[in-house]
Length: 477
Image (cartoon, rainbow, N blue to C red):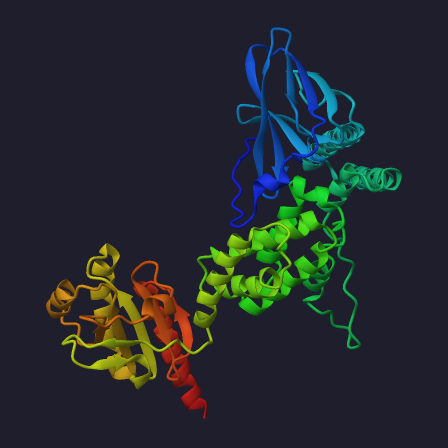
């Protein structure tokens, strides 16, 4: 039996808003009878986005009957009946009173349904597909040892079987257009790529297959059907498009998230999920620079009122604060200036006065365990690269400087050192979004950010890349 997970991280999304409507007090009753089970807890779970969530609990009595009942209503979508974390079967909820009867010999094949036309249609589809898959497996097994003549016959049978399945699915869509089952099954399909056209010189564009597949990837998703968010398919499709079909740079990802959201605007449910999921995904991404996607979503959707129906003013204010904090720190922007005092607390020093081809902004604390390990490593990098136009502008994050001075002296940190001190307090912590230490930024000669929040170990590789690039560009002049 299939094991499932019950985790879904949406960041800003209210899962509670997407469960049953509290104002609709009709109530639901879902009875499940399984011959062969008794005196056992059973669970009802619903799909939402990338995960499943518990909805209700019941217990099989001595006759194998369990009834899920509550005063609220079930959302139209796909649900699962579970024994612990083992799936018994999925079903489509399209009414508030449904019953399912089966047995332990084969939960799915022997199931009988009352009160749910969607579930009947769904199980008919599953039964048919399972039957055809068994035929296909038998033919494929025979094919492995078949002689040429027989192999040709078996291949023809497989092709006929495939055609028959396609005709069945086409009839399903035609006869049951608009049902969740039809839209779900249709959404499972991937684009069928035609043969690439030939160019005038007879050549074939090697990128045709990929471009066609990407351009038609969402053809089978009905973006007007909000019920799809309560199945597994919608999340899988947008994730595949973002991670597999989109080039992983900021501009390409922004283009893709805008495309998805434009399509999803046809349904408030799909739009809400897509916006919430992608905002969380790119705010939390550990890939450098992906916070630019989060900032884009914040500025162009949340801060323009497109999420207002679903989020409190307080949540929107917090998100806006986060966007405004990250926006000045995006890769490609000029880093904010830092003004602090030197180690003697006598002179002011500032980042913009540093003249170097590359400047490492390093915000750290001698009390930080990670800093204690990373700072000596950075010192070795500095010693190897300071003659190549690299400078370090290191800022102590603590307000008490005694331990900071001792650490500088002990490790002979002969780069530019600065900190707050005495009656002076600067604003570098808010300017650089310092929630933890160390924080590492790499700036070019114009103080534009070219890398940020990278480990000291990764910093050397990035420096080598840019130094080699500079050397190559100079040789080509």
